[in-house]
Structure formats: C-alpha cells, structure tokens
Amino acid sequence: MKALEQQILSEISLDAPWSLVEEFATAPRWRAEDVNRAVDSLANRLSALGVPVVVHEPTIFLSIPIRAEVQAGGKTFRAKPPSNSRSVPEGLSGPLSYLRSNPKNIRSYSRDLKDLFGDGVGSEEEARALVAGKIVVTESFANPANTSLFESWGARGVIAVNPGEDIHWGTCTTVWGTPDLDDLPRKPKIPAVAVNNPDGQALIELAKTGGSATIVSELEEGWYMQKVPVVDIPGNGAADKFVFVHGHLDSWDVGVGDNATGDATLLELARVLWNNRDKLERSVRVAWWPGHSTGRYAGSTWFSDAFAIDLDENCVAQINCDSPGCRWATSYHQTTVMPEAQELVLGTIKELTGLDAIAKRPHQAGDYSFNNIGISSFFMLSSTMPDALREEKGYYSVSGCGGNIAWHTENDTLEIADKDVLLTDIKIYLLAILRVANADVLPFDWRVTAATLAATADRYQSAARAKFDLTPTLTAIADLSASLSRFYENLQSGGGNAAAANEAIQGLARILVPLDYTREARFRHDPAYSAPSLPTLVVATELDRHSDATLGFAKTQLTRGQNRVVAALRQATRQVEAATR
Image (cartoon, rainbow, N blue to C red):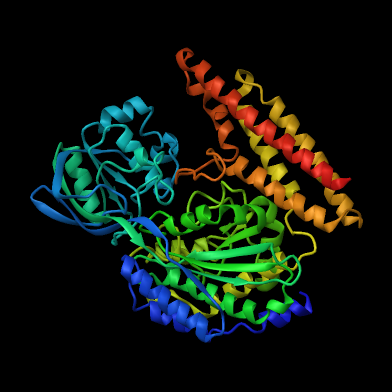
C-alpha cells in the first residue's frame, strides 16, 4: 500500500459514523416525511464536519405500505403488503391455488420457470391453468419476477410464504424507479402480500383442499418531494472526472443493517475524502438516496435521469454501499463487482483483510440505476457472514444485513451493526475509491470482461447447437480480445498516452456494460428482474423449447439480438485500436 493511501486510511474514525448509526436506530425511515427529516439530520452532520452538501428536492413516485392481512379458513393471518402492489383495503377474495417454488431459489428475481419452480411447472400453459382466476400461494419473498408472471397468467392475487417466523417487507414491481408512460403498463394490477412460514403452511394446506381466501391490503401511492443530499469533493487533476459512491437512506422501519450502516459509511467517506481533497486526482461524488424501498430505486433513478449527460461524460465508476458493517459479516464470498473491476476490488479486499473474496455478477437490484448509461460498477453487497456460520445458525438466505435474517424486518435494530466489521468495510470502500480516483490509468481490465463474454457466447452456442450460428458474435469477441491484449501490453510496456487510454477505458464501459446487462436502450431503465449475460442472445438457450410454430420467430429475435451484439463489439474494437496507435 502506498504511503499516501496509508495516511488517508489512518484518518478513519468511528466517531461520526457510529453516532449516525445510533441515531438512525431510533428513527424509522420509510414514510416520506421521516426520510426528509433523516436527510436534514445528515446534512446538519455534514455541515458540522465542515463538508459542504447540496440537497436536491425532486418529486418522485412512491408506494408506501400501511397494513395487510389474509382471511381464510375462519382465521385472520398477519401479513405485509410489498410496495407497489395493488391496494385493496376493501378486500379481494378468490379460490386458492398452490404453486410450489424451487426451494433453492425462493429469493430469485429470475423469470425462468425452472429457476422459479424447478420441475413443478413444465410450461407457461400449465402454470396459467393452475393460477388463472386464483389467489396464488407460493414459497418466496414477494418480488417483481414472480408477481409479474402470476399477473400475466391471470392470477387474482399473490400470497408469498416467507421462509421463517418473521415477515419481510419488499417490493413487487418490475418498474425501475418512477414509471414513465412506457413503464405504466407494467405497474402491478393485482394485490400481493407476504406471510410468515407457519401461517403460510396453513394456507398451503387450505389451498390443497380447495379453500378460498380474502386479501386485505392498504398502501399509499403518489408523488412525494424527497430530499437527496449530494457531496461533491473536487479533485486536482482531471477534476471533471469523478468516482460516484452512493447508497440508500430510506429503510424498512429503522433498518440499521440495511442501510444505516451504509449511510454511516458514506458519511465517513465524505468526511475523510473532503479533508484530503488536495490529494485527489479525480473528483468523488457521494449521494444518499430516498425511494429505494418504496419507489423501487426512485431516488437513484431520478438522479440518473436528471444528471444523465454529466454521468455519461464524466463518471468513471459507480460504487454502491448497501449493508456494510453488520455482525458476523466477516466473509467476502458474495462481493458484487463487474468483471473489469475484479482485480481492483478483490485485490483491495485481500490486502486489507487477508481474505480471498469471490466476485458475484451484479444483479438487477440495489441502486444499480446506471447500467443503461454504461458505467463500470462494483459493490452492492460486500461483507457477509460465512455460509458455514449461516447454516449453523439455521438462517435462510437473504439479500442484505450481512446475511442476518433481520433483513427487511422490525428486528433490523442496533445489535445488527458491528463496529469492527464497519471499520473494516469503511477501509475497503475508501481504499478502492482512492485507487480509482488517483490511478494514472483507470484500473479496469476489459480483457476479463471479454473473456466473460466469450464464455457466455460459447455456452449459448452449445445450447443452440445447429439451430443457430453465433459465429459472428464469437468472431467479434475474439477480435476485441486481440485488440485489448495489444492495448494493455502497450500500456504495460510504457507506450501509449494515459489520457487517451482513460478515454478508451471509460468509453468501453459505455458500450459493454449496456451490452452485457441491459435490454432497453441507453438512458432508459431495464425491468427489475434478473438479466443474464448478453441478454439479447439468451434466447439461444431456449430454442429447444420452441415448436415448429414458434422456432422461426425465436430465430428472428436472435438474429436481431446478434446484430446488436456484433455492432457494439466492433465499435468497442475500433475504440481500442484507435487508443493503441
């Protein structure tokens, strides 16, 4: 580690961040007015630390859960409505139908039938016959993937059976952020609720015997002014270029591990980086989001829309901070990172902890609201408890709080936070930021990304066999890989121009990130369910499912998807070659 990095890291203190964690541990932050009060408190803390902050006041669309219950079999079962589900305070009744979920994937955001239901459902036609006109009971968290599928199959409502004694809040819309006119048709039109496992098992048994149920749910929806605090820390060299680090400030209830610890991490990062701004080459931007839970990332999506051109032209990396510093979270085997940033991120963690982190592909979650712009990204979830410890405790898998099942419940309170883990995670975030902000050449290796794309295309070709030829894609990836090899070898031998190299590295993100993570056009937002690698080619893995009646349509879609891929890869190759000359 460089002396400068050591000196800056030595300035980290837990005084300011832990004080914020303690405050937020007594402050619920899901209603709009509570979030704004929390922003005011955070802004006051920043000002007291000498850190200037700008507070934006956008109006965003939110869906705020109030209450829910399920009436069935002469009993009333406690429930929670996910945000964005249809509000039915007067109640909605219907016959129950049980659809068994794949036990390995109860928190999956996939819309693949096998992923969701294992061998329990053979086709969409079979699923539709089971659920049309019914209230579906299924083991899962209430989420956008299965809710949208059930709605499309004609279900009247959804009862998600959570895996434990507690009921988890969540959201069930596939719309990312505030809807636009094109998104509105995907806004959920059916009610959904979550129940705990014991109650859910009773409802499953009732469904098996032909029982009925009534869902009662109440949500408040509308446009709300929400405050967005942003700190800009100027660099001294390429000051127009910036590293962007952010996380959500709203939470379910007091949300200590998700995400008061993240808010505290960002506070300390802002303090230390502001005090060392004279030592930064590039700038750093720090932001805290409202609308993560009740607006499906509406705060970060608003920022992505409002500042899209600045992000496009100047953001060199985006770093999400969600659920750091939680108890027992001493492993980094689920570290979210895009391939080009793996060496940077895994190396940073190894250097600070001695642990071998394992990279995980970013999924359609967190506040990754910048994929369609095309920004290299890392972190979302970083530290988590070791799998062996989780199994020892009998915990099921969740999507935050360092693996603690207090995630998205009333139990996510102060004891979920851990000072020692928080200190380690702050150091990891800070060192990674410094290594992007101060690198002569941006530390992103696109050769790793190209290798990942090649592996994906090979797998898709194996699945398609002779039914479709992906040779143009494979050739374009090989050409890009060869150009990237020459590009990085030239840099390593002392050739090339750093400014031109950085422009090319940033430019590759604008091409390859949307190609690998999105279906929608740039500056739009993909639906909030899982996107496979090279998503416009994934139909290659599904050709065997198509009969003669639909195979031609599938191949037409695949042809168009391949055209997009090849054109983008060739554009990337030209960019690399121009920077190598």
